[in-house]
Length: 108
Image (cartoon, rainbow, N blue to C red; front, side, top):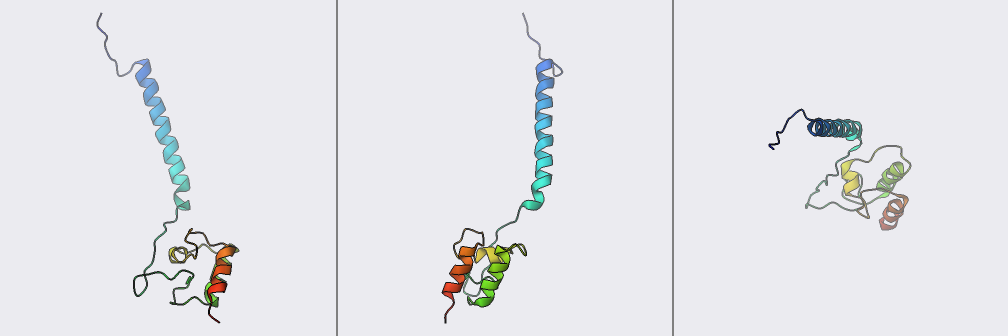
């Protein structure tokens, strides 16, 4: 007995339906979360290195950096990629511990 394969058989149609549904769900989720993605890109300074804690990029860690970090902790604005690259503990999240680290590193 010879088996013939039909593109429009029950198994094929069920498989096509599952694949189509999966692709639709993936597309919808991708579109819905596309705005949530924030690339983390390091910014290089003169000499080629980012100074940890220097959120404003002026080449030194000062009180302005602590103020910027505190704004980020309080959620007053979204961090910029160069600010995340200067995160003192390099976990790409500015927290109150980072504010304290910046304050401790300011030379008196």
